[in-house]
Image (cartoon, rainbow over all chains, first blue to last red; front, side):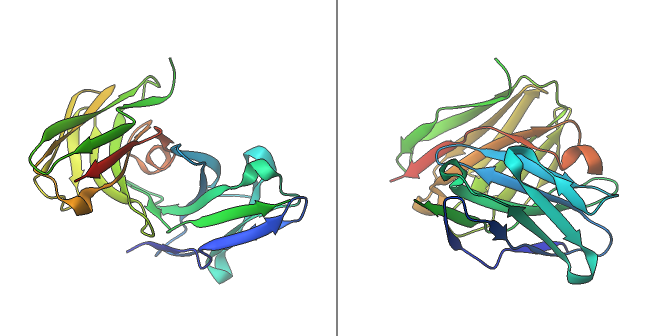
Length: 114
Length: 116
């Protein structure tokens, strides 16, 4: 069965500082990997996805993530955080063939301090 | 109007009430989903519909009853709920339920349900 672990429940970053949110997954083959973001009172929005090819993927709002097969990780990064990035971030894994549904992690709440 | 729209945004109901949540998507997608989001838990997939046919029902109690009259509309009928059912209910859609399509979900803003 597929699973996702986001080890950090909360992270606080100063505005302008760099950010890395951790995600580890469990899946029997090469997975499809995703990061979604949820702002307060909103649904989830797709930030970026990895299907195949280049292991460093670029997303919206200046985010990027790197797929590391050897570490079963897909960490999300941003070089300089803005106050508007404060939100909850969800990593998700999906199957790469046939019928598939996403499995989400519990999320990491990002707080941005001035 | 574009995207995925959910109504109502907030709902308070007693345990003996019957209510419904509505979801509408304007993306031309063929698959629709209900998720439950509770504090400190991962999103729980409840139901999946593909072309109005239910393809997944994840051991959800019968007090939750989904309905998909067409590929653009999805309902969640609620009956004799329990306080632990209080949560944010998210609707989502995707192009289809195949691997590449199913995994890219577009979510609505959710319906916040409180059961007294």
